[in-house]
Image (cartoon, rainbow, N blue to C red; front, side, top):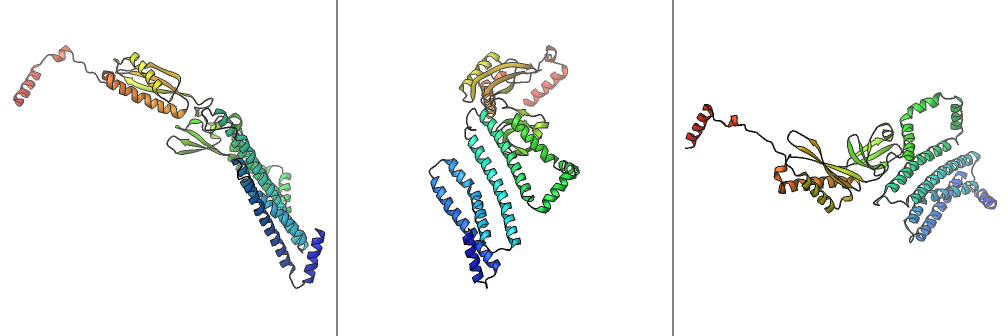
Length: 379
């Protein structure tokens, strides 16, 4: 390297009519061009090597394309800055910029490694399986902790890059020496953000919710679609999205229908007449459940749960493997039971009764006169 630098300086001295800054720009430009060309060749070779591999290796090459390009540019620019005829301030400026780029590269590599590790870890779990409770548990923990760690990496990288500047470093030291006033103000200003970050860590550890959990929040039913660093997206049953802060699930009560497992017992109510054949309806419910592909063969039951003035309340219980199937089988039970009563026992459907006493049946002079007038009009 010293020999190359000597030759370059000799060339510059022999061509004294060429400005030094132009030679420096040329050397630095050639360094960047060499770095880009080398990266292009290496990336093409790596792409061909993993073309017949699985999706993980292809994704790995795609993910590391940017960091490798930046690393080659830093190395070539460092070599070019050594060769180029730079003044002392110019050399210090370029070295400082390269140091900042190296810190950014370290943060970039750390985020890439974090993403690759999470991907490898989550490949063992399948969310599309029938019993995906364990998969949802690990996926939720990994995604939340990944986002928190990624945010910390970004913050640390920016802080490290800023601390390379002398003025910023002195300002940071003075802030630490001032012992707290600015820290208190900053903490109050960032209270919502910090609260959600802490809530995210707490959710990752305790897991009151997981991805694809069926929940009821704010009176709406839906599934947890995303859990980000500061908020949760719930996909409602009609495809709307409800966005809630992470702290909501720590500070407010909500229903989680799939906390331990995805199986649920669905309830369907009917109001029928007192003459309805309960035992026949109970056997019919058993037949409907056995014929339905939605039933998980665990729970089916019918009971009279309440008595009203004109009707009695029938509660029908059927179970299914998840919340969506439970809702569908509840609707199916209602529809088929109503159709059965309409076809076989129409008198069992709710109806209004009117009783006529013997006193009301005896004719009065006024009623007799009205009847005679009606007869005359008809004749």
